Image (cartoon, rainbow, N blue to C red; front, side):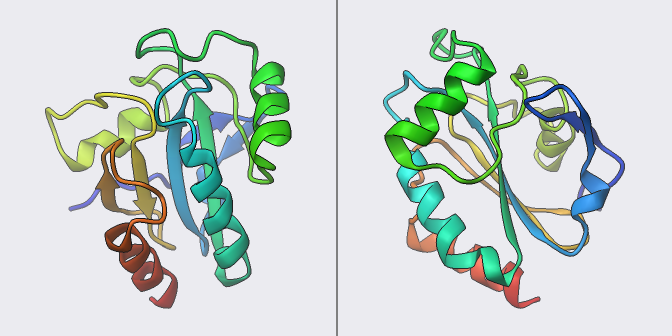
Length: 156
């Protein structure tokens, strides 16, 4: 059985709790992000997906993470300002986490023994909260494989 994020509580950037159950009915793309990484330009592709699919039920949630190469040293406010000014990001940048905290502790259960390896790993979550797919850092948000999985999830 695929793991589910239903009942998983995370923190918004302002420190308030956000129960992922409240996102039921939406397709989620959850990403661990870093502002000083070679993959940082993927923010542009994530924003493109947000603009293209938000009206069909896509919600992107970005979680800044400083675990890999110390590439996210700033405060969440600094990260948000960078994302907005540099990439026009309109999706939520959540509180900073480690790769072993919620929601990633649940998301990685889809592939037991395979922890997050680097920044910008992407997890596709279906409308029912189950983990549908995982995309490694090198898979761009606009990669045809990711887009096809996303479109299938939105159509379900």
